[in-house]
Image (cartoon, rainbow, N blue to C red; front, side, top):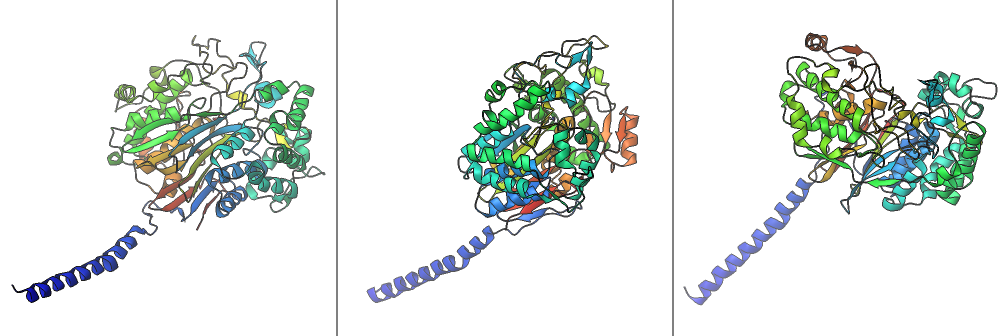
Length: 587
Ligand code: GLY
């Protein structure tokens, strides 16, 4: 080949190369970039569809507080800022469970550092507390344990929220509290659920002079939907904290007013108790299930470890083939619950006071061992699983919310006053409803029951101890990214509600709205009864009954607020079991 010919060929090859590069750059690369955009998608095959957001999401039990959280995200705050603002706002707008007079648990995941942490801001008993505090004449005095100031622990919410934003947020305490302050000082329109719950709780709240003055009109009549409810004393307390920081609540004027009220009314909490309060950052309880990782809450909540225990027990069962809420699946759920709650009765409590065998409870070998004990053809008697004593009633009044921001930070928060409106007592001149969380301790831990069984030290009340909880705020991860953020109120039933919600997603591939809506069951080992929500077929109940299962039906179980994050979209749902909840996607 002559030089000219060679040059011509090279030039053709060169041109071809240029054309090829152009084809790649202008055809394939844009196409790939386009492929990276995944439009929102969800299946409606399960009959429910989620709310969708592009740049973050909040899902909250009460809609005014949800809007507060959404606005913080829109203004550029992160999920932790938003969660703290929601926490303070709910203290004003959802007084039955939102609080600064109670406590709870938060799981936080930070996208940039990859860190996931559990924040324990559970209430703490008084320095003068003792295991038989509520026993009078050899009997538990329910008024003392549930409706007196002696049922209150030092509240943790203010310090919990403050620590969260200080370490993981971007805004100041003043900034995240400002919406709550405005709502308390200027008031907000009463919504239907609040009208109903205040009317229903009138006997209790109306008997307390401070609470009565706030929640009912001067002539004693009820607030109606749309009327403005102002809370001036609560606004004062919030302002103290905004201006003087957390110390205002634990060492300053707010603590003084609460402890003055305690001293005047046989309450136990003192300034020393408030000053001794601490929030703990704990390593979450971690579990795995068919490729997902689960970060959930450690003791003093029993929720996380027992949810992981139940998931471990069933991981090798093909529940999907058995069918969602089929008799075979529900049988396994009930038996797993029976085992988990039997273990809970013995082992759950404050880890500072009792060596809780968390590793054993979430161990996969232990799970295989206890799974192997489940007969497939019959229900067990609870006494077959582990005989101790009946557990106390645990109130279902708590509240959960989930938040995610556009950076992938996630917050799962559950907090409470224990009963709706706590013990129904408002500390004078503070606007703060007091919790009755100490009712979550075992009140007669060392006394043999009718069968001679003695439950031990794990959850006995002691000075400066935290009572066992069931709250289960949870983040499920897929490929190391937060995938499902969920949690629920429901007292002792919380663990089972969160367990079923998570299983609906990770085992049965439901979208988050369907997962939140399907009928639930609850078994807590004692009493030996399964609560069934309406909606489980009579055929299924018949089969289970033939196997020896015993039921009660009717009441709803739990109230979840959940978010799924996948393919760059946020899918959220609040539980259809409640009114006035809201899930807001940021676009
Ligand atoms: N008081 C309800 C709970 O802590 O689970």
